[in-house]
Figure 1 (cartoon, rainbow, N blue to C red):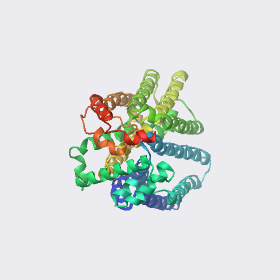
Figure 2 (cartoon, rainbow, N blue to C red):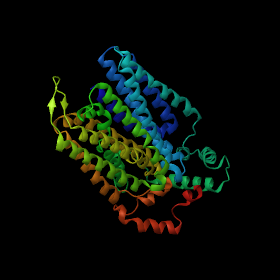
Figure 3 (spheres, rainbow, N blue to C red):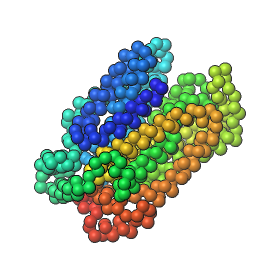
Figure 4 (cartoon, rainbow, N blue to C red):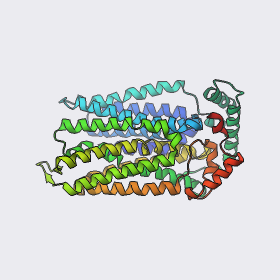
Length: 448
């Protein structure tokens, strides 16, 4: 219950974030979320019973849920198309840094034999939330949100500062502002008034793709590996708490380092290729793990009922290496792209609501997988690796068939990108014709 309280809060927070971000702006919503998260962390840090800890984690989860929906959308609306993927990928890189810090703080304090060992890590969380809150005072409002609320002159100034060092007459600034105004005007005629309308044609396709990105990201098993790394490493042959915690800390470092290639190259590779190659790497790593474990394991249980696979030295090293290969493959692909892709595929009047739904799906699948995985790890061991391998191999086909490429496209271009066949691999000719006609790519060409 204590663990799931945070995820439950994240789910609720991501669902309610859409309306808040539309009404109060992306900038103010992020600041509100920082305050909510800090309140939850303070309650946890000072908790004197189980109930306080659960309530505190749920409140912190509300803040995390709002941030996880709003931050990528805010980044996407500020970024020029040519580097949008890179900028939004920093969301994932920041997450990996948080994981690294948490692992090593946990390792450094596991020697402490008092409640300080868990109160300090919780209290430390308030620091980055406070830094973000203060930093947001210096951040601009989203120009798209400003135009949507009739503040066109303010949007013009923001775009000029972001794109042309304050030059209001720069051609790319004027062009992008006109595209935003036109998009907002068109969207206003067909604005989505309720969440149920998101599942009507033609919006439904994009919503389902956004949900699929987050669902497949969680179904990759990344959080199983990160949550239960000490257990997995112990089963694979690492003995002693220190060894398993050190190996877990190293997995966080690998996750952080291998997110960097995605940041550097996602706008060159594109979203589709990045996801497909990442799925291939994840699938191979899982398959090798399953073979190495299934062929050599010898199950035993200790006096506490904990499972040991007793792998020979060679296969145990193979499994440990493959865990790192999987983490690296995920970090270069599904980790960042699962935040980039949904944040850029929706038009202005559905963006907040749609992103709240897709992000909520992330937390829902996160909760479900973290709930059943400990049981599966204990009872089917290498069978879980095989399941994840199959999911990753299948995801290659899903991306190839259904996910259109969005690299170097303006947010206003997405109506055309997603306006054709549901079979993305067959729609390239239509997109090429729009490119040739000049109806696509005006903003990105000027920004490159």
